[in-house]
Length: 324
Ligand code: NAD
Image (cartoon, rainbow, N blue to C red):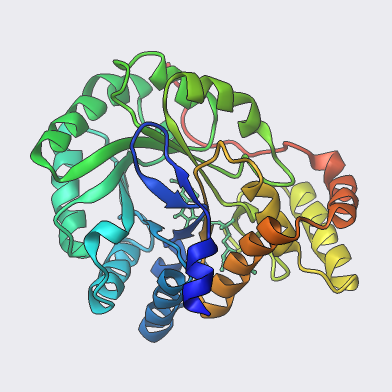
């Protein structure tokens, strides 16, 4: 079964990088116990199943679980003996348990710490994590140039930036030399309740920048179990999503499947990163992608859910500091 599924999980080009990512990417923040505790055995089984089913893209950060996610992911990849050139590993810099630091000195040190925890010689993508919390001018003038030096050492292959507000991407990409930022990672802006990333895709394409979209389940809002305690959405958005999840459940359907399929439909997005912490979730999410390809989506259910979510469409939450 594994082999036949592996052949089918679609791979998509990431901008001009030459990397081909599985359309479903493995978000490793749950391995840092961000959405509840995950045992080492569970983590290993989850990563193993992801690889068996054709997932080749793994995303983490030193921030997730205060370095725990990187360490656990690194242990799993080592224990499973995964050939290095068969996976794409992304981690981040600038955001840590104790705060933000996008200085050249800190991010240069950061890669060595991450490589040690991941037990790798290089990462494929190294991203400035949640740049709206730093000075965007520092990102342009100091952080990206420092990462370009890291590229020359071979410790990183490609450079990315991540964050919630979409205008941070245009701010930076309009100011850096062409080709110096390879990838952007946007989250919570390409899902049933929020489609605002769509408008930015032509601009990103014109810049030759690859697009990763994370959190298709809106960090738990579009799941039967609901979001974690720390979720920043308004109570209005939370209750609308809960109503949508209940509606699906009453019809014997799963809102997470619908939500992931919705995000996967746009092929301009190279990979949709979903946080996963169990074999069951991996199987459901890969299954959802294959079903989309082979059968299509439940359009009636989608219309019903879109109607329920219409009053909160594109509602987001504040993130970051006011830029001067
Ligand atoms: P998500 O929308 O992927 O939701 C994750 C939650 O949904 C977890 O609780 C997970 O256990 C659950 N889940 C996954 N599959 C499920 C299924 N089939 N059924 C029911 N529940 C399911 O949110 P996320 O984890 O925050 O985002 C995905 C990944 O993207 C992260 O792990 C991280 O790697 C990345 N990300 C990066 C940034 C950033 O760089 N700023 C921000 C957000 C996410």
